Length: 122
Image 1 (cartoon, rainbow, N blue to C red):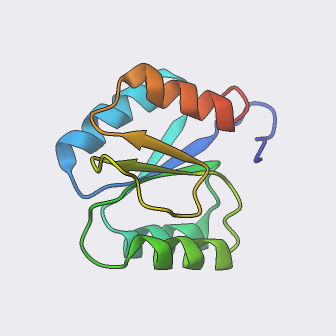
Image 2: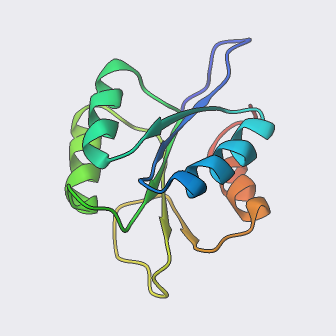
């Protein structure tokens, strides 16, 4: 678990290629007191992980490009040790090494509850 230094906000890295989804999640996460970084692809997220280590990663499942399992493996290989939360519209979530799953459409309270469960208070 990543605990920020006093006075610092925790950052959630959102990996999603859908602009409306990013806008909604951004509002929810920021209003809860977290910082938000965004990546439009899993490849972009890997580049972002080279420069910083967010407290958590929130990832859409259905995206083009790098497969989810490969992305997770590469993120962990780059030293990311925080929780990964998978967002999916699939009724049966795929078996991936993640710490949380949110089924779309999800209630904003469900997202916040999952963040609160996995991270210390912002």
